[in-house]
Image 1 (cartoon, rainbow, N blue to C red):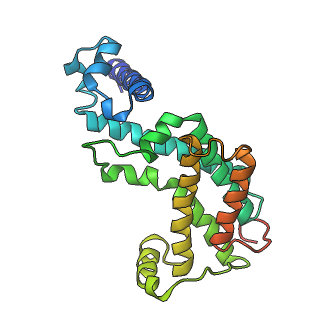
Image 2: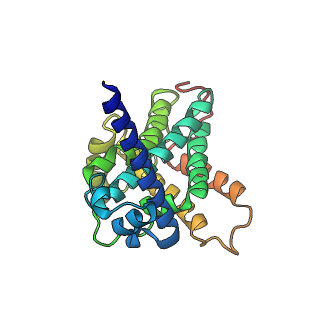
Image 3: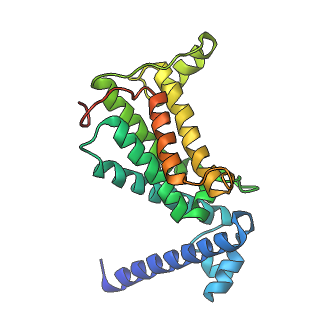
Length: 236
């Protein structure tokens, strides 16, 4: 790589980062629905045509911010999981859930971008899926470790739900029982519901010691997916 080409590449990385940083500032101040490429360009002292060379549309910029947010959340969850590597599946599940909560409290506007109200006129492309799946795949992996170890207490499954449970299992985790996958999907939704209730104020004047409450709730979610046996280690 020539010196000139390397300098251009570094400049592009720096400008891209500056655009994203200003867009995040606007998200915090105005919300995702009011994000404007022209406003971002104006704050950075750029002409709009120059910014379009980095992000051709508002949706392209939103997509980049969404992927960054999902990746940041996924990294926080994976780091917590690695730190609890010597613990049993239930403890690792709770560690991941607490990492999700901690990240959300530290990045409320980014959390709102990915788990808040949909942005009018925007549809997330498939390119967001790998980043969005990181936490879910981590939780599936914890349950899989338990299933291959001492086992899981299989949740009950109504007969009328079995066809849908089998479809979800085939799509998400074919090596796990359908009733476990159904419970996993429910727990995944409940995790983000718990975090959202705290972040967006629904727990005000209801739950005071929210850290202790959340840890207990995360343990109940673990119980719901079958993590009830006292296991030690990743696949004890």
